[in-house]
Image (tube, rainbow, N blue to C red; front, side):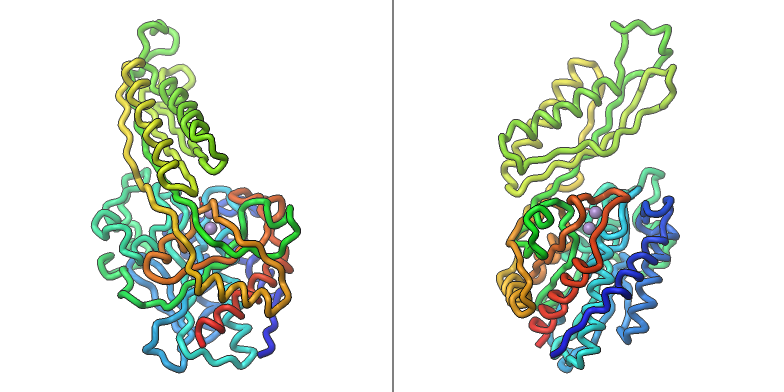
Amino acid sequence: MQLAIDQQRLAWELEALGEITDALPPAVTRVVYTAVDLRGREFVKKLCGEAGLELRDDAAGNTFARWAGGEPSLAAVGTGSHVDALPSAGRYDGTVGVLGGLEAIRALQRAGFRPKRSIELLIFTSEEPTRFGIGCLGSRLLAGMLDASAGARLKDRDGITLDEARTAAGFAGSLEEVRLPAGYYSAFVELHIEQGPLLEQRGVPLGIVTAIAAPSGLKIVIEGEGGHAGAVLMRDRRDAFLAAAEISLAVERSVLATGSVDTVGTVGVCEVFPGAVNSIPSRVRMEVDVRDIEESRRDSALTKIYSACEEIGKRRRVDVRSEVVNADPPAQCAPVVVEALVNACNAHGLGYDRMISRAYHDSLFMSRVAPAGMLFIPCRSGVSHRPDEYASPEAIGQGTLVLAEALAHLAS
Ligand code: GLV
Ligand code: MN
Ligand code: MN
């Protein structure tokens, strides 16, 4: 089989998708179920239709684009990623796995390959946690790792529920039906940018992921007492933001206390109410992200954060409420997928490193219902979740080539 990737076309498609944004290009903002998110999906769906793939959406808005195999009753092989993008993100996170997955299918079609198993390209809903505070919504629901009714009740900052938002976006039906039947996929492979610097630093073209780190997310609300910034004396204050500042430092201290470079913590959201320079903050809403490749070590950091919240709340006489949004276990990639990727790299004379994914991905949840694995390509300086995120057409082309080869093997 003579596989050839159309790098130029793929680069153009990535660029065109990047133009569909709520931010000023090159920044990409495509928050789930917004008009630009839907336009981004439509752009990809149109390309899938042109490639002859059969399209369907589920009730959560996950899209499946199927290339029917010679034996369509067999479990399918899945690939894909997401097109939603957090505020002021880049063009490559997720999209490389979606458009690269599509180009891998087109390359196989051009090569005259006939899959025995169907090959399905997925666009997962809301891999980014921006709107509902929890990432990988689509794949969680597919894997049955998020209860459908709890998922439906999730609310965004404006109090709009996931159920309201997805229905308004045109995704009808019951969320109960999103969960995949057992054995739906025989394998799942996701192509993604590394989002870290290692491949570039080592000059290695590809990374084969062996495990995905364990993410967790907390929502913390602090209620103090507002008042006049001039008239209320310092000793009488119950300033919610000062408690939030201490809690943020406690997050840093708690992750550093594990002594491992693999434990990381971020306070990415901190909203101060009422948000006026001459008004004492009465209320703060924070979102905290804590991760590790080892679940127990991550949990030890979380425990320290909870007790810091309690201590700081008491001492500062403010009410601190914390809610665990998610605390997911890590995933091991499936040997059958890792082996298919190793063989594909070897078949094309491309070097690879085995590596851990510190970022989370839909594969974390797909691994609960299918043998799953991931392939990383380098991105410039390891930069991601920023508008200057960049992966070269050559790097994307190499990843797509290896993905196509691995899909062919897994679908034969
Ligand atoms: C995914 O976007 C992550 O935050 O790891
Ligand atoms: Mn991301
Ligand atoms: Mn991603």
